[in-house]
Length: 175
Image (cartoon, rainbow, N blue to C red):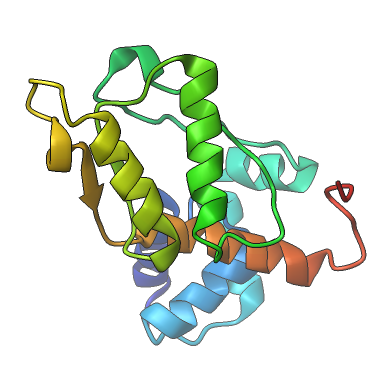
């Protein structure tokens, strides 16, 4: 395969899900997604050429901010809650966190989207109940939407990667 074709594949990876990935992750993606087997050093060299600022940022461990969109402009870019708990497999945990947030904000969002995990069933029921008397387009059962979990896969994959690569570090103190 020509170097220009490899460069094009690397550009596609960087523009997509691999924009924050280092050369080893891109090299791995080339092997798995595109079945392209090239030396890791070639990927590193091409990435320096394609994205010198990104390479420098990753070397310096600079974080890149992301943009998030919301239907309700008031909540655009705001994380309503962020808590680290031992398990979210217990359906009471996300539901309690959600209710605590609704109480502290003195209101709930018009619509909540979650994946189809069993831990989200109670949260979905609560959201629909809270919106049962509303008259807008997101009233009652339309106040919750189930969806696929590609966004969840990204963050869960990142946590898994972080855990494997920094297993000796403790990021959170136990509560």
